[in-house]
Image (tube, rainbow, N blue to C red; front, side, top):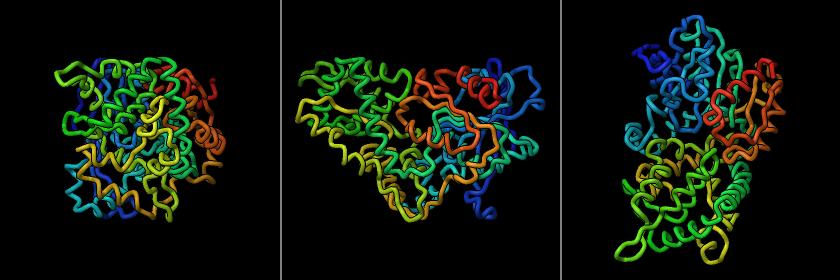
Length: 436
């Protein structure tokens, strides 16, 4: 462990940490990779007197949020914790994975083998590798948002001795569902979220159809070479899972077209906004391993599960919709083969993605028997009709983990720990302490 720099922001003292861990924890004497984490302590507090809280970001593929000062839930956490914001392996400053770095591994086969070590099981073993040097061996509290909650659930079943308590926000995974079952549950939610958006903004029904019809004839080029097709446009539905996402989508659609000499065109402003939302340049790992986070049967590949399930839901087919009169349905965090042809950040990794989709030998991520005997205090915020994590799956898992306490709410969407900030964290801390 190396502490690189200590510096200040409003109300906080931050320290950069570097760690070296095995790429494959089953072979600790083999190749090693670097991890980065940022420690945050409230200004004026003695860090040595505070217990640690480890934050695991959602994803997969996103580095820990870069807070400025005491934003969102961090304000509440800093009243009693020394917080570690970990960039999970492959993200942020932790040996980042992208089209530029992966060729260092070799060809697509070597890249796919490498990426098989970037799921929640490896992330948890990273956390356990760095914990003793930071805490002196004491267990810490883990806060897991979305995919970070998947990691925390793995942590409970595989290294509970490292945990003082676990707080999960929008991230209780099914213990048994396959990738295909996860997406079968997701498409009805996407349809409900689309219907709710159109009920709020009925003028967007025609706007969305008009944009999709335009793209069906003239796919648009986005900044950086991204190709916007009707299917890519539909994936803007990823906005509908956040608290203000429906409003963001509405404002984006209302300014889509401008008059031009050859007739109406999609505006540069619209295309720039779409590119910022759809590009995987900042988080390519998300697209590469997204379906593998659900893979647990060593004999069964994920096989582009979201794409296969979508074919069974023709109402989501843009061509079918445009040939009729139905509203265009939006999709969410599905990853399809065409992402690796339309997005220049992913195109060089297409063959690697195909190999990962065809890969077998995945190991189980959860231990139902150990979770049923759990003794670690656990609380989870479960958001009613969460777009990204199926509520029924989450509640089934909540019943399977001994002692887990839930807060089921429709006050927030999936990003509740950001939107609700300190209130959400305060509620979960009260639950694990039997104060609620």
